[in-house]
Length: 366
Image 1: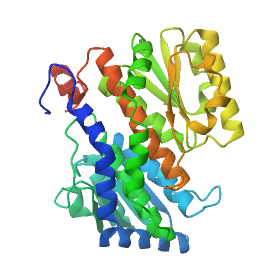
Image 2: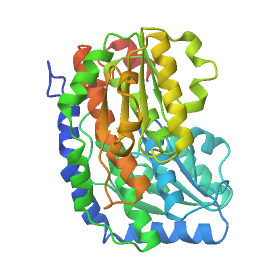
Image 3: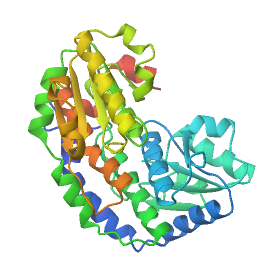
Image 4: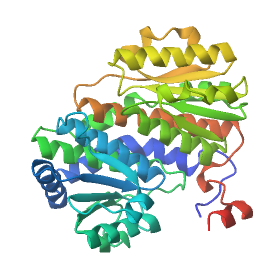
């Protein structure tokens, strides 16, 4: 259990603040890591041979796995229908891939379902890899390749635990393509998104809500899912994550002025159809009186009318120093994390224990 503090800064606060330099440090170390080179070669060879590459995880690690799948799909320039998949670890344990490569993400390496997925993959004939904090973790004993992130999250409301695997995925992608990668690019991008004041202002508008919906498609879906989890476990606000088109097909029937909305349009900011449908989502929210906010790429901000985001917006600046999908997913991390942390403050919740300081919650989670 993280030490429970009476108020901010929480451990989560400190973890977010540490991320720019942590990401730079991690990327620099991974650049010469033999395990990264081996994993990149396995991914590249599996793709060449027509074998599946599947990423698995649970919770925050599942969302990081989805982000990595998008980054690798972009790096390999895979055609529609050939995308690298990310699935929930228990599903992979029940129906493991029989060939190719299974890459698990598990921050501490002790998640039961993820470790079962690794065992099942090995038993079915697939090769395995794990992205985790420490090579001595239980999961590390089950994988053929282990890439370590080395620095453990001090809050159970994981932020470093999400960003670190995304950095790993980006470094592996650079090895796959042979493109140069400057570790300082992570630091610079993350620092440029560190807008605690803006996140606090948005949180103040959304905090009275009784429930929330986060929305994002394509590469932004991983970010939307991670924000939904952070709002639920960190700020104790019931939240579900939906794709852009999905929310317009029935879910709004249960929404009203007590339902907060956050749309994310960063990775897909250049897709006109997704941009236009995101505007439709925000327009529907306005009709329902929903407090709506957005996390937007700087390039698309002027195209989203300001009156559609009355609760405010956070911006992810453009950068040419990282591949586009990796930049979008990395750049979205701190805004969504800061928003969740400031929501926890506004709602009077300590996010670090993710509710497990409550005996009933602790019992419910085993």
